[in-house]
Length: 86
Image (cartoon, rainbow, N blue to C red; front, side, top):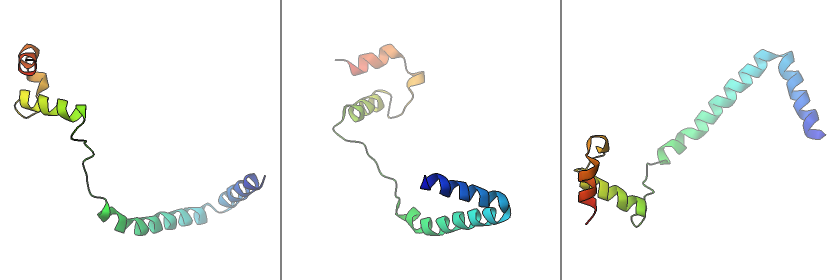
């Protein structure tokens, strides 16, 4: 019951003074942006491809068979099969 009462009180306060609610929301977003700004520089792109996985092996086979690109739409399926299968 305590959580319901707290939510009801916040709703009532928001309805009584919408401008104050808007100002507090803008301040909260601004504070979150300030706190999150240093974290953004530490998020570097990385590769999670496992070199031993079947999907990486299949991608390498496709790249070799298609000349190094993902041009599968313009590749003849028969020619691709002949290159991939012994």
